[in-house]
Length: 201
Image (cartoon, rainbow, N blue to C red):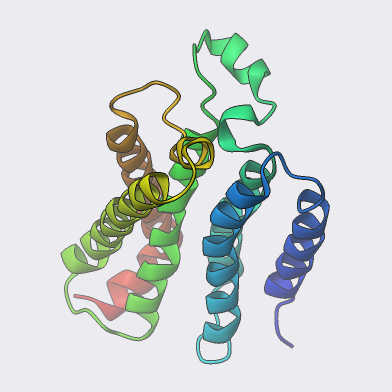
């Protein structure tokens, strides 16, 4: 009997997508923020026909999908997140940083594929490749945001960029992605250390 976790998460995403697709702050920004997520969901569905991730991996992937869909509705700068900002005394809305941190969670399924399909034969590659892959994706996404920002109308461009006046926003976003990847890789090691030891000497 197959685990129903991916089906449940897909159902939750569809409901969330419909709800937060209603009257977003800026429809152009909504499309720009949601298209990458829709592609990720579509890719996960297609890949599941050839490779079945563990429930933990699917849950890790869902975090970004969940947070990013909310951010697309409000724009990340305007997501109701003031309670966290007030709690820690932040001057900006850090909801986007949290979403970037969950980008790094995709290091977990990447490592899972490497291990299950026996694509690596050293533990260092198993641990480092997912982190490097996330850093690469993070850099490419920052380039996408920059290109979008200079190619569309100024308001939508700056909204997607979401720097909130921070000149180091792109670097901090990539750092958040990387820290999320390191966290996910550590979790992967803890959960799978026995199998790792058996398959990779």
